[in-house]
Picture (cartoon, rainbow, N blue to C red):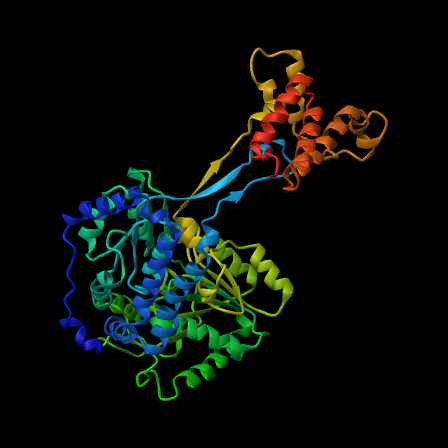
Length: 565
């Protein structure tokens, strides 16, 4: 299948009238409790991985048809990326879904056995982009499945072959009562956003992100927004320029620069620009020895409108093109293009480029670059190429961005354990790996307070008395010393607060800690009863209350008092 075949492919849009019924079906599945079963979730994750693995050739043909993308890029970035997401979730969801203990020896309230349960939020909606239609649409869905959240995925209408293939294959692999793929354009997206969802993930432009956020706000629906932004590069040419230019040109050229984390522009000290330009020329010749027009390693622009916008930027820039600049409207081809001597007010610097054009911006010093960057929106990513520890530290500490990569570009998105997301105008929230699971998970606080803790907290009940007020002092927080502006003599000297601590209070604190340690050890019943006795003494319990509490505690720990036969 070639790019020219794209026009013959018809994508079937989902009927607007179907959306409420689809949402209600998924909601019924969620209420049934079916998705609480972690093994069920794992089955769906594996099915999703096989959906891509068993149809790799068809997927690569679809990516080529919609994006003119080389098989190498589609396989290594998109297909391997989404399968890795599925496998990571499959391997770890048993652990992710377990409650977390919030026990702390520093708090008496921990005897209430605090836990955080991982509760699925409900029915989710993912609205995906055109540039990485699988990785950025199905990637968040992996988190929804792992979390036990039924979910609708709305694919991009700008990649009809990919979106149509996904809709075709979905019923063959996935439980349609749990997840659905729908297709459509602006009217369909608007209809989906008019419904109430329990979480929405959107990847796309800043303008569209505001529309999504506004629609979600009507239902107080939480959102995760991945909106891109102008990701700057701070270049120190004293680093290895061969490696730096290879990594930068690769990051800018993959998917024809239609990557939200692609380097948007390069800041370089003006006296170092020529050195960087020469390195780029050598790397460009290495990447495209017969010229980019003849290369099989260059993707195409997704739509005619995007092609026209990018071509206009090349025509309007006042900078000097040093590499590339060629284009072809019929095939929507724009060569990877590097432009030097770009001013801060150049057309290339007015908004996110989102294409294969890389401006080099000479600055008098790094402070000028910092001032420009910090005066604008927070970028989705920021890149530093330098071997100078002081410069790297300065740039990291004096900027804000969704991510910061040192001597690399874009790859933080695929590194396990790292979140992918922006802040401010570049987005909110994060996904990939466990962060996708967390996105669709509500952290549900819980305590299970045993009856014997009445010894510790019985002072809270009316009528309030002087004795109860005294007992409540055990909950009084201890402020670290010394107080700012004071010296140690104010703490431990004659009259200092430490000299006024009651020996009885100190003993009680020690006894409580020892008791909690003893009670929590799952050793013999007698040992735990002893711990409870110490805890009762430490809390000032009377004799009858102490005995009653010990009996309650024996019941709490399920002690077996039946003699062995």
